[in-house]
Amino acid sequence: MRQSDSHEVSQLNELKIDVGALVVGAHYALAGNVVMVEQMPIFGGYAGGLEETAIIDVATTINSFVMLGATWHLDGPIHVRWGITTAREALAVAGHAAMAVEKHTRFILGNQYYTLAGPCTVMCLLETAAQAITDTASGREILSGVASAKGVLTDMFTPMEARMMAEAAYAVAGMPVSEVNVLLDKLVAGYEKDYKTAPKGKTFSECYDVKTLTPTDEYVSVYEEAVGVLRGLGLKYWDK
Amino acid sequence: MKTIGKRVTVYDVYDRAKTGQKVAENDWDYKIVPQAATALKKKYDVKIDKTKMIPEDPKLIDSLWQAGLEMLETTGIYCIDTGRVVKYTRDEILQAIAGAPDSFIYGEGKEAINVVPRAHSDSKAPIIQGGPTGSPCSEELFLPIHQAYAQEPLVDTIVDGVLQTVMGKDPVPNSPWEIMAVRSEALFVRDAQCRAGRSGMGL
Image (cartoon, rainbow over all chains, first blue to last red; front, side):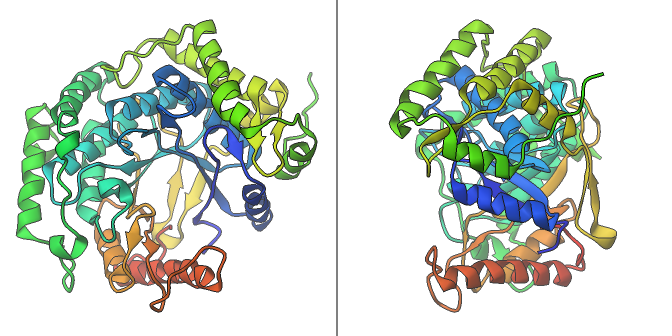
């Protein structure tokens, strides 16, 4: 890796560290690397509820810069029941923590993406869009994803989810927060009722021609359906 | 004028992790952290309406910041290997905040990105780091999958997946195969970026 790549080191849940991370941090510091410190606070875990998790998220974010000399912090508030970052509560923690940190620091903040539904499903794309919208309108600098279907199944992810992450971000950049909140509430309400029946989705080789590296017509059609939902909520990005 | 203090380093943290207050990990997880968070929530009157994912009230934003700052100062960080708590002073925390980088170059050459802070109201979109984000990736498809991400026009940098096998072997943690796997991941991503015509792209 180059010095200008992001070199990762992680904190532990909640407000914990191991000596191994300090060793890695010392190496990165001496090598002059870009350092990305990662931590995913758990909503419903040790911290407890929404407010407590958001408070710990702020503390954890600050700690990345105090303890490990972070260049940037990669967040990822996650829901204890569903194991995803796109649940309403996870988004609320991320959105509140980012706004609090943005107002009081010049920190560079990222967020990582874990959806419940898998690739080639409208739900997966809408989950991704909801988080991208939250992160963009709360001042984050880097969006990192997507680990579809909770990021636990082999090859169960594709660049189409990253495309949605990008396009949704571009679609809302500069939009007033009050308008974004109305849109987000509707968008999340549209998929959160389906958690227990979330579609597993398809693998990369089922979604892409693995020689030409282009998405299947089926996935393009699914993508267009998800875009239709977002346009219905008032986003104009795809009208150009 | 106040003298500029010394910044906390990872070496200071290690030393404090050997001398800080001894605490049982269960007490940290189930008593100290949740009780402190709940007390600060009450002290600063932090209330989140989850129909508004992003706060609109400046007072709430400030209260949450103060609560988080105080959480780090008063609770500290628990080192699981030594069973001790690392503490910082308020000045040390504020100094780290003031001294944190406010820009960095991500990648090289024509693919290099100057990452700078953006406001929530900024019309400039965030940096897009595309990839499987640590998800398990088959050895056979690792290269083409990452090339497909690098080919996406709006993707600025790559966040890679994790090789399920390397040379057919399970990259068990703390084994030589683990080193082979992580080195191979970096090499494959570089190849993928080159094949997409974006050789300077960050990883």
